[in-house]
Image 1: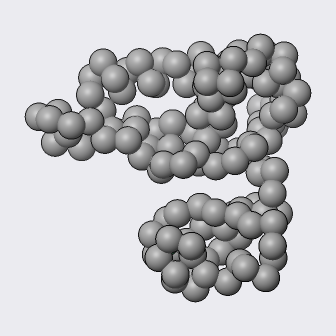
Image 2: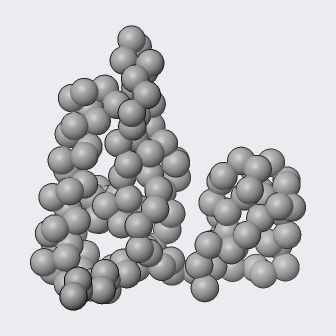
Image 3: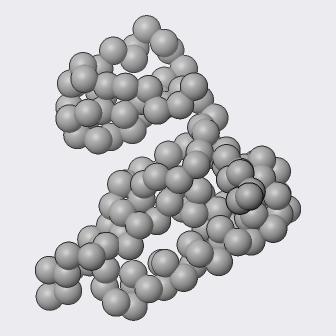
Length: 134
Ligand SMILES: [Zn+2]
């Protein structure tokens, strides 16, 4: 029986949902799918400079889980940069630190500590939003 996947705790969603190469290769249709937990591990280790043990505590997964996700993230990013591929950041098994919402119209993700302010997308003002975590 396959081991149930660990849910990674994410401090905040990525600021962008995708990155596009500029130039000839942007015509390529296939994109790299970077999972949100892969982005988070990469961010914690290489941007924040944390150790794998520290990242594991924050994400509430095992150290070996962090190492496994990190390896995947680095390979995907190296492949995207080398082959000039678009990077989509989406999906995975995650939970967020706060209540996060996603706009149905522009796909932006946002949260607020003030519940009364969550009625519309801060970017496009659409009221067509839904909660992406509990
Ligand atoms: Zn919006």
